[in-house]
Structure formats: structure tokens, C-alpha cells
Image (tube, rainbow, N blue to C red; front, top):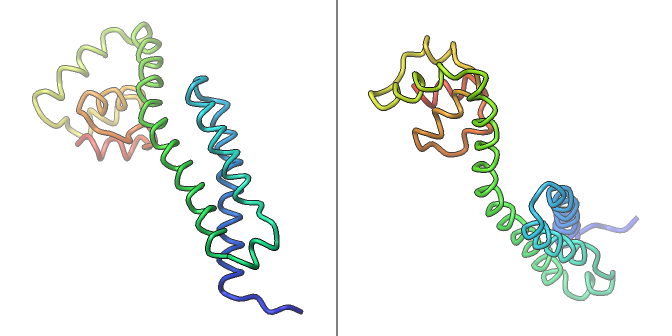
Length: 157
């Protein structure tokens, strides 16, 4: 049985991370607009190439192999971060259009209250998650789309 070194373990972990990032990026690219998807698929292909080096290159220069894998993962993370910043605005505009016809009287009452200050928790708990997200958007908070109802209430109160 061959002894595994720290370099081998680090190399294997970096290669696995690059392969996982490539796989996840390709899945995400299917949900994005064409331009963003094309860029993300390109980065995913680069990560896939970085995750499958030859045994000879791993043995000769494990540091370079790890560096390429880490760089590929970082470039995917950067691209995903850029697309995530764009994504919430598109998501929010769709639910806002759908929720306005279903609850027209509630929307004006909800939008005018945050300007005067924080709302009481009892009032917030009676709102839906979509309405709480709209309030968080109007208040200028970020990252609220992933919050649960209780987290949104804490954020807004």
C-alpha cells in the first residue's frame, strides 16, 4: 500500500473541488441568460480540464496542478457572484407583478409603513414571505431572497 503525502492529499482535494465546481457551474448555466451561460460554461470547461491532469504532471509539479485547480474554482466563484447580483432583480420583478393583482390593497399599506420606521413584529408576522421580501428590497437590504420568514422579520424589525 502506497503512502499518501500531504501534497497528494491536497492535490486530490483541489482536483475534486475543481470537478465539483465545473459540474455545478454547468447546472447553473442552464438557468442563466445566454450571454452569462456561455461565459460560465467556458469557465466550467476550464475547471474540468484543470481537474483532470495527467499523473505525470501531478507527480512532477503538484503545486502547479493545485494552483490551476484553485484558480479555476475561484474564477467560477467570481462569475457566479456576478450573475447572482444580477439574478435577484429579475426574480423580484416577476413576483411583484404577480402579487400586485392578488393583493392590491395590501401593497400600498406595506410600502408606506417602512418610511416611518421599523414595523412592529406582530404586523410583520401577518405578512407573506413575498411581501416581506418586497419590504426588504425597498429598505435596501441585500441577500434577503434566501432568508426564511423569521429571518426576514428579524431583518426588518
